[in-house]
Image (cartoon, rainbow, N blue to C red; front, side, top):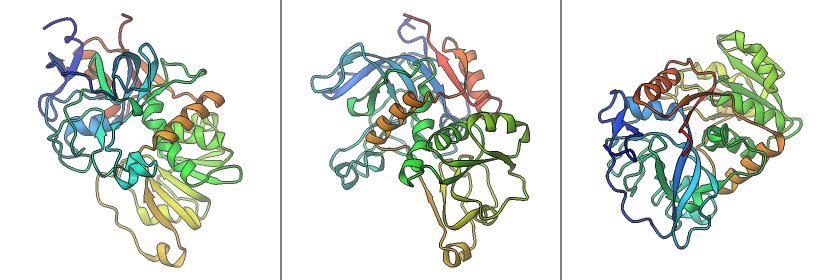
Length: 354
C-alpha cells in the first residue's frame, strides 16, 4: 500500500471496524470540481449511523467523514475557488442544479441528484443519494466535491476547530434562521451534545431566551456557559407552554405528546436529529393548539455562508476533542467515543502537517 493511500480509513462491511485501505484512482477531476487535501475531519453521529447500517445499505468500502476542513490542491476549469484556499465541506457535495429546489436556491432539498460527501451510487434507504458517483469522505487524504459546496473559511474562524460547523453548525443554524429566531424568541434545545451545544450557542447569540433539556443534569454549568437561561431535566416533569421553537437534536426515542406540551400555542417542534423509530403523537396539539412538527436537513449554500460569517463575527466555535488521523486504532477509538456518547461534544481528527 502506498503512503498516499495508507492514511485512508474505511469499512468493508456494516458493523466492522475501519481499516487502512488502498483506494482506486478517482479518475479525472470534473470541470466544476475541486480536490481538497484534508487537514481536519470531525466525526458526526451520522457517520456512526452509516457505519452501523442504521440507515440502510451503502456500497462499500465506505470511507466516512463529512465535516471537513482542508486546502484546495486542484481546481477544475470552471470552479470558483482557487488552489491553495482553505475551505470547508459538509454533508452535501453536489446537486443537480436544475430541479425546482435548486432553481429556488434550496439546493439542500435537491430532488434531481443530491450528492452526499461520502457515498456511493449503490446507496439505499432514507439517506440515499440518487445519481451519486463513488466519493470518499474525510477519512481519506483527499476528497472531491462540486466547488459550489465548498466554502472558504472567513477570517475569525479557527480552521483547526471549524470542521463541526460544516454539518452540525449548519444543521442547527438553518432552522433558527428559517423560523426567524431573534431577540424575544423563546427556544428550547433537547440534548446538549454535538448538535445541541451549537444550537444553544447560536440561538443565544441570535438574542433568544434558551432553555436546554438533557437527562444529564451535571451539564447545567456547561449549558449556562453556552448561553442557556436554564437546564431542565429531560426525564421530566417537563414545563408546559414555555417555548415557541423546540429543536430536538437527539436521535433517542421520546414521548412526543409530552414534548409537544413544552411548546406554547402555535409553536413548532423541529427535528434535527434523526429518530430511530417512527413518531407517534396525538393530533390534539396540531388541531386545538395549532402546533407544528417539522424537520430540517443541513441548509442551502447561502445559509452556510451566513452561518460561517455569523460564527466568525460572534466567535462561535464548537467544543472539540482532538485525535490524530493516523491509524485505524485512533480512528476506531474516535468513532467509538461518538457512538457511546463519551465524546465531549465533537471529535476532530487531525492529519499530520504535510
